[in-house]
Image (cartoon, rainbow, N blue to C red; front, top):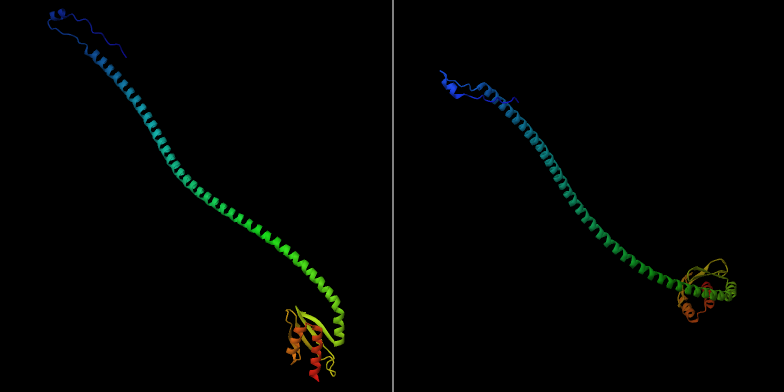
Length: 245
């Protein structure tokens, strides 16, 4: 910036003594100095405006960054809130499922305890059945031995009866005896005369006879009174023989 030109000392008395008094105000130098000053002021103002604009733009950019960051934080916060709501709902569902599972487990434990009690009771019953079965087996063994002894004693009698009476005695079903005679009909010695005797109860019954005997009820009554099966067989043979005669 050029230095300001100092105004020269004016001799007012000398100027007034001149015929045409004039004062040189040096307006050109003033104009130059004023122009330089205004230019300096304009440059300063422009620089100040540029700095202010730059700071304002920087502030606007910072404000935009802050606003964007705030918006991002708000969006993230909203997403976190939604996620929190979902997690709370999931937690509530898991708690409900946990309660249902605990209830199911408790019910299954009660059922298991009941089953164990039933198994224990069944085990006791099984042991009782085993003991009863063992007792029955021993009784059956004793009965079998007794029957074997009786069979050993009666077998000779049965053999002799079958030989003398020309008959065959055999079991056809449980508690049913089939007695078949031969040599009753002298013309046809192999013609079969038979009857089936039911010995399942205290009262003996004849299921069927071949051929039919008219006097069978009388013979049955006598059998149930005497309980003598061998004599009954003999009487049946005699009845068949008499029927042929």
